[in-house]
Image 1: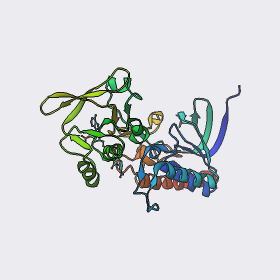
Image 2 (image 1 turned 135 degrees about the vertical axis):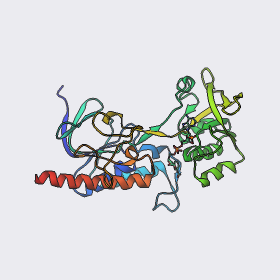
Image 3 (image 1 turned 180 degrees about the vertical axis):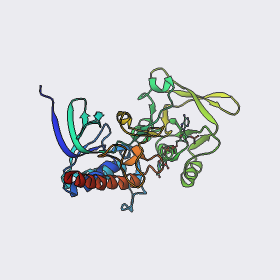
Image 4 (image 1 turned 60 degrees about the horizontal axis):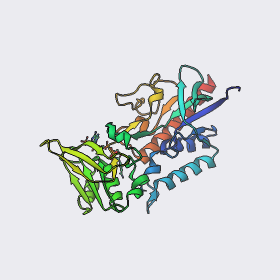
Length: 314
Ligand code: NDP
């Protein structure tokens, strides 16, 4: 079979707020962008509860609804939204080469990387073994399976607090396992969990092992101050310890920091490779908000548009 090859002016990889905003701008500029959704169409917001801090939604909106709005707006101006995962790239060629699902070859004058970030895991054996059998990194996706039951959540950032609050509406009790004696979360989120009678916070607590053969039935924890070990009976174990950028396929070409966040030239979305721009969480380990991701998506489309104008005049 002849390999599929296609040439595009603007290729957008990823479908979170950054990718869709880039698509809205690029399509309104007449650049006929093609956007590949990646493995999680709509990005991290599709596994988010209510979004209360995105301007323009005074009564809040659910993450999936908001991303559906973004997609429709991008398609309205002619973006081709396609399901597919970029599996490798070659940024030494001009146009740049991106392979989708290991079979479709796209040649693109500009590539906009908006691949976002994914949940981090603890990395212990029992977590992998029991993944999907009581271990989850998404309370909104899986909390329902544990209604009326006791669960634990690990992490002390805004995500952990948000998910603990969410779980407390469904589950009979939520243990929050926090490795320090303080939380990283914003004050408002901390207060919300501390004042919630269904949430019990265990400070200086780390996970030794998640217990259960076929499914989770408990967790063995230890106090990292006293060394004391104990077990609690739970049926769900939620991991909310942050995210890592989905930038692995670009590492041979694009400059990144030690954590894998793409480095952009300050004041722009330009990477070290001409014609390749990065936006959203893939390049932002500081703000990581939907609205900031959308802002950089807009910047990437404008940067690409200017680059193409110069490129065509050469
Ligand atoms: P963060 O990186 O902010 O927090 C991660 C948490 O996980 C920290 O408390 C960290 O602990 C803990 N942690 C990391 N590794 C381990 C480990 N191996 N064992 C135990 N605990 C661990 O990630 P979030 O996903 O919470 O938030 C990311 C960004 O998104 C933040 O900027 C946040 O403000 C934002 N956000 C905003 C929301 C909102 O406004 N509604 C909702 C959700 C997120 P330690 O502190 O000890 O390092």
